[in-house]
Length: 189
Image (cartoon, rainbow, N blue to C red):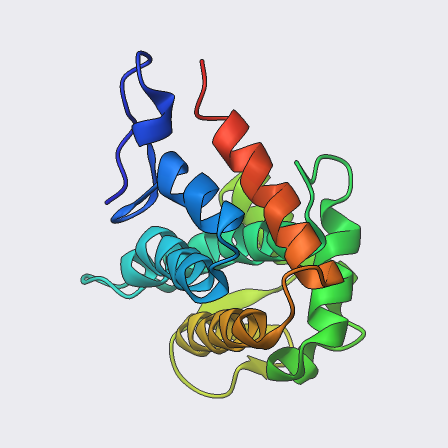
């Protein structure tokens, strides 16, 4: 797992395993898209996918991790420093846009309020929403946490694969580099 470097050398902080702030800065100067995209995929896999899929599994915990990942990934895609006061918009637009989450189209606001905010603020889902680990991705107000995490993983893989084919100066890479700059800045006390 990535570790925090000493305050004496924030450049050695790992953004993902085997990928430090210094390595990102060097890769960015050299425009090494594959190396950076692979590190982004590792970062999300290490922080979200692997813990969500670890035993023992619990759907509630998986969804808490899934909501964290969704917000982090969408902030990455937008190049945002933070998502304060914009989380609802972020969730609604992500769930409406991503084909992997077509079942949620038009239900992002309710999902945000009753699942994401319910879990984060009340430590439970609200509004009759439930979390299970079997069945379809979304059935009424019941979310399959296993399929939710798997769908997030597919979105992540598609995003990182697309980054490898985009030109360095594209809108997508400008957003990635903006977000990575924020991440690197956060490594300095």
